[in-house]
Amino acid sequence: GCGHNLIAISNLGAGLGVQAAMANLPGRLVVLGTPAEEGGGGKNRMIDAGVFDDVDISLSSHPSSNLTVFGTEAAIDETWSLAMVRYRFDFYGKAAHAAVAPEAGINALNAVIHTFNGIDSMRQHLRPDTRIHGIITDGGTAPNVVPEFASADFILRSRDRVYLNEIVQKVVAIANGAAMMTGARLEMPTPNVMYEDVRPNTTLARAVESNAHAISMKVDPLIPGRGGSGASTDFGNVSHRMPSFAMRFAVAEEPVPGHSRLLTAAAKSPLAQESAINTAKALAITACDLL
Image 1 (cartoon, one colour):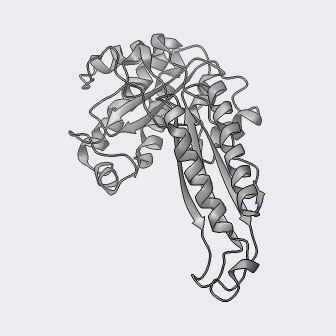
Image 2 (cartoon, rainbow, N blue to C red):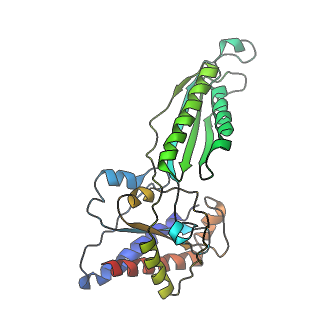
Image 3 (cartoon, rainbow, N blue to C red):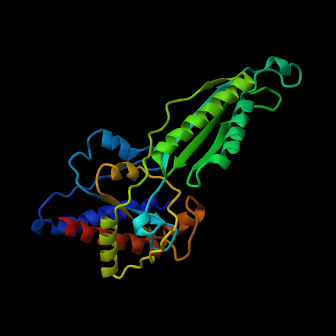
């Protein structure tokens, strides 16, 4: 659960609010549906297709597991999310009977395990904002058969896109090393699109904050030095092309973990619905101010 059921409500609601006032305003309003934010890079594909070419400013929203937060879980001036890319490593070995003729096999699963171990050994040398997390998606079919195929899926993140590229090179080198150690063959399908970090925009953030206060919406106080979000979003790619701001809004009175059943339940609560509506109002007023 990440509260995505509320995003369309708040953003479309904001668009409808602005539309109602457009008769007295210059400019043009565009409401864009952007699917596949969780890894599919919907906004990236729309950027490549030219959908955002004639857009000057982008406003959006996203539910939060905290009270009401702006930008990310950081103070407005320090808002950021992590740049992200996803890699899959497919290892091909040679099947053999694990008890009768193990010497005839090449264990693809060992290559996956060595990849995990290599990445874990590298963690102590990574910057604090770097995140690497992965799963084994295929580890063989039976314990008495040397796995001839194994696969792992990894997500790599960092606040700094340039540094993330360095991490990618190191992780790929680890996977190649794992293949060499085991004799397996490594294939890497084309990685998913790169998610940029979200660029902070204090001007837009404070404009939205002011309008949230104007409608008596609860807003977290600014806490200098507070850390940013460890999550990633394709909205970051939009923020690198135009002034952008995504408002965070509450779904629960107390913090609940993201991507959990607790947040799924919270996203259906009366508080979540009220917050989505108030978010739509704050964004609509801000858009009207900009126009």
